[in-house]
Image (cartoon, rainbow, N blue to C red; front, side, top):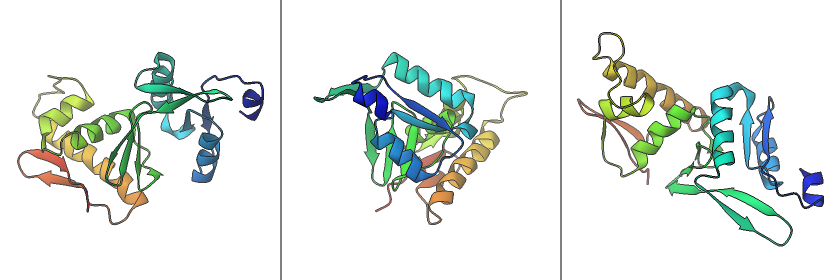
Length: 177
């Protein structure tokens, strides 16, 4: 990346690595990387992020005197930062490590703070009207899905409690104070 900067080449850079330490990620991002993807996240996450960068969707270009740089659009919800252009979520500055589907569900939950139904969450993961097997599995599947999302938050913050179950309805996001 340093060589690209020295030559004033403003191409977007995404690092794919097996070393996902936060300090390496921050170092790459501070040196101009557009994104930083751990190999363990899988090809689907990498492909999605690369497509977003190629399409240039949900990103803005800021030009400084030395180079062109792509800066992801960030949406803040208290301690949560959603990087819409790269489908990344940071809680208290730490990447949660969500899959693209998990990110979509989280974005749905924080959109207006209103409870989201099991069906709405299920449709976000799959597509509207999707039915698996004999049907009526959306509640069970959504609970398991939400459990995985919560576990990822708890891994970076053991006191995390912003995702709440709304009995017989679904889930909602509570902005911690």
